[in-house]
Amino acid sequence: MEINKKISKTQINRKINKKMNPELKELAIELKNKNILEVADLLLLPKRKHIAVNIDKINKEAKDGDNVLIPGKVLGKGEINKKLNIAAFKFSEQAKEKLLKSGCKILNMLEIKNYRIIK
Image (cartoon, rainbow, N blue to C red; front, side, top):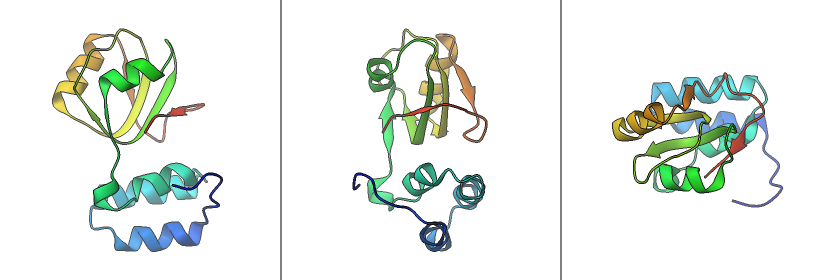
């Protein structure tokens, strides 16, 4: 992805129309309507470029108490020893279990404020 890439609502609309997953479409529309275009653009990447982040990467890049947004799926590889507020499009069962066990709070992508994107 290019640095400082300008994203328009029209581009987001075109990408939304190409997607088949109704959950993904609905979330992308909500993000577009709230002007969170960078996250909507990342969610609408082609399938081969979808973002999947392991817990160990989140643990390495985030600070205790951070609000973390993953525009894709969180996978369960690794351990987490920080308490975070985390939002993602999807969580694997193992990742969700580990995050809740460590005291992390799982939020909806539309609820999280002042977040840090990890991809």
